[in-house]
Length: 283
Length: 305
Image (cartoon, rainbow over all chains, first blue to last red; front, side, top):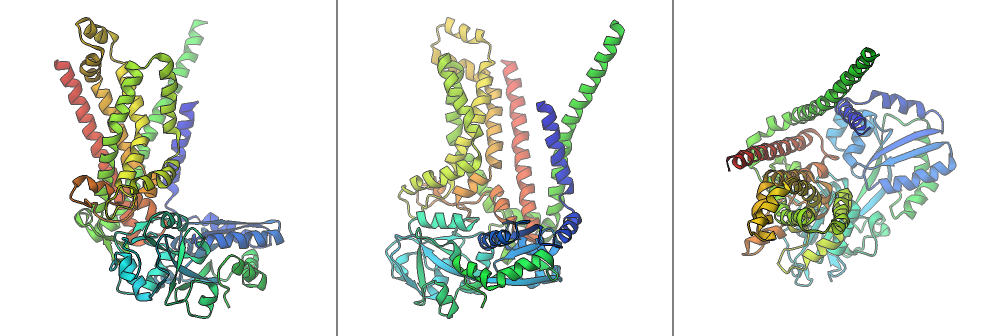
């Protein structure tokens, strides 16, 4: 019995390895079918920043259309663009602008901005710094400044906590805060999800990190940049500088249930949910 | 009808033989398939970056087209070394206790608990490390120490390889003929001398393969490492004058490099991650081959005595 199970599992593995390479045209066809009526399934894949918002928006829309199932899974912004482009998911999620190289690879993709999101700079609550300038932020995350006493804080080494290379949040943060020249400090602790970044930052003395507004909670302390607190109001009135769009991506113009869901998201009801979840509406 | 019965018997024999052969060959085929696939995907990186460049360059910044994995090789090597230093003595002590010292009733309590360690999912080890071990290690007062790093990772890994090493080493010790033990005692050796001078040397090839199995597991462990090692792409270096403080340095393992970045990688970056996999593959092959060599040497050495 054990041998049989072992053989079966090894064969399955071999099959998976052999098939892993080809894109799945079958999934694309199945996707096209299920978008005809407001029933069936919508698969949504990509950014872990958009994921929690998409889940709530999905549940709200499922409540209106009981025959419809919306399946949201993570993977990251790049995966989101790729999945929408090659048709392995009906909707991709990305927490950043679409790169020109991605438009080149998938010329048919259409981008729908569903919300805006601020990125807050957070510190471990023991750090007594409350306000930083944009330049100080850049120096801290690039490693040019290594002790909190260099920016008016206690004598305490700065521990930078960051997402890994390729994360949408990191990409947006580097673009907005580090700019063209500076690079993320090499010695930064890297954690592969927003939740792990928050846990690490909240428990490591002297830690500083950046988090999407949706992941803020009292375990970490937010820093005001150039005097503006990281709040949705300050992003809306332009005084808080670090924000980016949250996007959903389809291959071609959306149809059927996908189109219905996307227009629900941009409707007043959908945008009310966006605001309730701590993100910024698109208008 | 003795004739008919034997035909049925033969048929069963032959079918079983084929089934067993297929199961054996399928694992060979899978190794080749995975090896081939990984190698094939890594070709663009090796061609674009150059294998020597990749292996000797310390900087890994895919955004800037730097793809050096030397820091990760050092990270994997050091964390494996650390886990062996902590885990092997513990595991061997455990094996000797279970095989030679413990009364039967006690062994029957201890053995399942050790085996239970092997059943804990690695993400749970990682969680434990992140929430309990990292804050403890942070208590060591050395500038730059955050708790995340090689020491935390080595301790977590040591516990993870313990059950593998302990159970293989225990069966090796148990397979040493009882007459050796009795003979040694009869010659006037104490129990401790007998275990140390007779049983352990007689079981050394089994103990060695136990350690190598543990090494293999240590090199391949991924998720628990990501959670406690800090994942910074830096060459681990001593934080103070004391060379041991290198274990307080953060690092990234080869496995962690793949797992952390693969979901975002495209193009050369993706290929470079497959190349990381090829290097890992080669490292594990080197470990296994040298283990075979050692094993063979120790068996032959044993025969000469």
